[in-house]
Image (cartoon, rainbow, N blue to C red; front, side, top):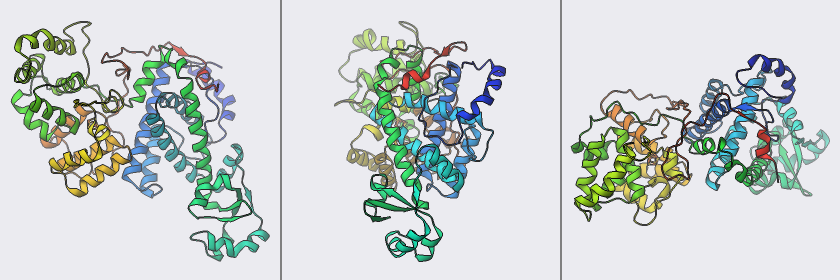
Length: 508
Ligand code: SF4
């Protein structure tokens, strides 16, 4: 079957047949999609899922999972993005299809490294946990049968016989609660976590799991399946990398940035060079503050630092003339003489402003590019300090920035959990004395813009958590993770179609 986004009529006719394809609102995503879709739809589905997973990540840190606030925020986002949110809704073929295809696209994008796989797995697990727990008992049962996970419920006679043992071995269960709840007899291998945490009664190689803990078994099973699937998808990377339509898109997605590129600034030329020292303290994210300090101290930055910081400064509004003056003044205070600067460094600055070579107007790096690519070596100052600094050094840096001990603890906790952008959001809140940052941080220039808005009173911080962040779909891809700094042009053509998606997920 084949349809394009422009062929909606045909699609609707086919949709009736396809309802059977998604009998449940919840999926284990065992079968890859087989239809052909346009590149435009491919990107749009992927971007929406990415937004959803970013929200799942944010909520997981900001709220206790499973609380009413957590659930209502997540449901709100699922509704907004048109993913399945009501388990009982029968007529949500489009939402289920979106859920299915978008999961597989991000699986492709996020299988590319261990770190990406871990992030994807974590968010997908959280999303699945929420959805599974939202199912009614009957739907849970149906879903378990559908994915061949039907656990055997013990009969009343056996339950009465084991009642004492079950109540003693199952935390939170007295005799009357044991009578009320259904218990399942499960092989030990399926209940390892519960067994380790001493939450179930074990007898003759079987665990007796109460209904309320069944989600642990299902999640374990899902985790195993998804981890394996990600590893297998990673093996098909060579075939993906040879597809010139897909590769830039997937790299773009795995940088997980879909917001403005900060290439055009309303305030170009409105920042004077004298302001930069003060701005670096007040409104620069820690990565740029670190680069600025290193430049002032050493009168030099190596290539990675010059690119990261130079493009950031361009994004906040420095003109080419200002940039040339800024870098030259600093470099000639070090080991570089004016002649060498004019012949070498000045060229690359003009180049980054699109005035030399291929005349490409380079855009500032987003957080994920900084976090995921080109890690700093000895003597480098680029990168993301939350990702690339030793925790002890990061702690000292934060202390020197006068962050409170409790604030430092919170930041280091987020870093430990690999939530680098959330750690940066916390740093923003602490340095700007606000309770809730009110946006989802994805870009150093976004940090600067939001900081300036706040400091100039131009923005009222929302007290409520705002999931929408600054996401904006854009068609031109951000730079490739492997490219030095050459932005890719648009890879989406409305009439180009991707065929045989399943080919990318085939096990070898
Ligand atoms: Fe810079 Fe982004 Fe890291 Fe913050 S999270 S320090 S803005 S790279």
